[in-house]
Length: 147
Image (cartoon, rainbow, N blue to C red; front, side, top):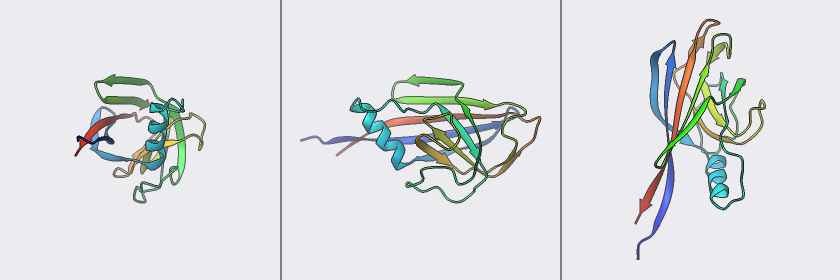
């Protein structure tokens, strides 16, 4: 008998003023995984629609439900899907999200500090100045796990 499950794998690329500054895997947290399961069952409409910036560089945990110190949130510019990967793109334009960026989160609400957090990363801290542009390309892939 074949047993098959699935897992979620996150991957993020950050660009500051067009220059790649970070690339790596990230953790899809427990609340995010639960929302995906609810969506499969037709019980959820709360999919990711916003990204938030924060200044807390503490390690990411699967039980995180919010950023440690959120200071700016904005709606996602573009959502696309190719096969089993969904990609969320957003650019924090000059004048938006100014400060030390030590954490970024993917959320189901554009309202500050509300909604479900799906994923969180803590890249190397970067100072976003008034004139800087920060682009986040965040992919979530559904992977089969067979045994």
